[in-house]
Image (cartoon, rainbow, N blue to C red; front, top):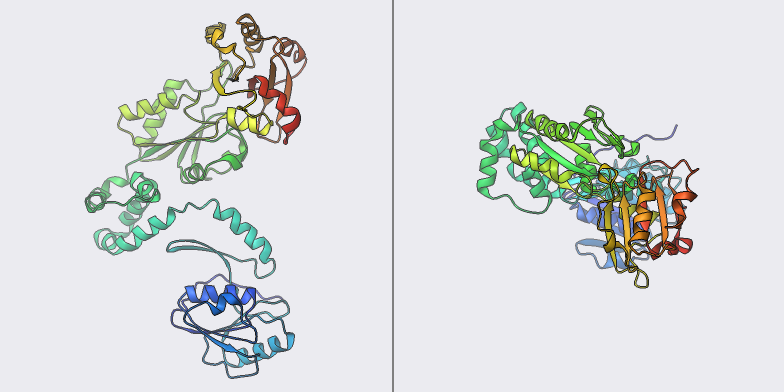
Length: 456
């Protein structure tokens, strides 16, 4: 039966620990033990340079021979000599030591986990010692998702835990810490700022109100690929209690919302709005006033054709706290995934983001400004108006052979791209079943897709 391990944290401060061996793996173990405050001795015939440079490490430069190890709390066996490993194992077992084996064939009591550190906060990962390479890979993924600012929260909690414990009962303490970590003061700490004594006093004095105080997070979910979310967006998604989301938010991102959160689909589709914009604005305020952490989740960026400005105007007017997290807008994300750079020294020195959702079906846009060739035009929500857009640009003086690209569901696994010219595109796609969301890019940079397309 293979050994099974339970994750535990152990203090090795001022505890004697022995490392047998001095190669790369042993050096890594020594570094971790020294960092933990252990009193470390290393026995090996050849000592790695990293170990020789460490202070407060006793080095015994000789091959390991059987000895009494009972004085050591932990023994790390990390040589490349099977006979020495077996001898050390028996000695450590007789001495009642905790044992860590760095090589196959010897199972010890202790695993050195892959660790993610954020100040006082530590996250340890193991795979029961079976696949350390996969464990390190998972650590890399998680490392990218845990904000460095968590260390500031942990430090604040450590410094103020005693005061809060004396001041509040258990239930009040829970609401205090939840509101601090999820609120504006917590965000300030996450960003590396310090809270003044008066701000801390104010937090404590108003602790009874935290139970009833809410906030709105206006978050850009990007163009579709969930890996394009920012770290901050992911954190706020995962701590939300009420979520209002649009139809452009991908299912993969919706799956990140806490299972117990209240989810409200307010998605807008061409010619069909599930919830009028004014009602959405008020709903955000009403839910926050109930003491909820409200997430307004939008495709792309909230402030680029996302009506985010309208929503937070109402929140400001009604005194509701809010945060805004930008997202990768469709113009930037979809063009990159389609292999179309929006600017290029040889073709385009500026970019225009333009709404293709023409009011009342009219062409009320400054078309004459779009005729020049050294710019890239990016039309959002323009699929229905494609023919009008092409015709108006040609009438304004843009060459008929100007390249154009349509990108459907950009950055997702369902991405499709069509290219053509202003003169032919509307006719070319008549029999294609193109669906929203589809982005339109017009300009000489579209030619580069033939060489630079990397996503299909």
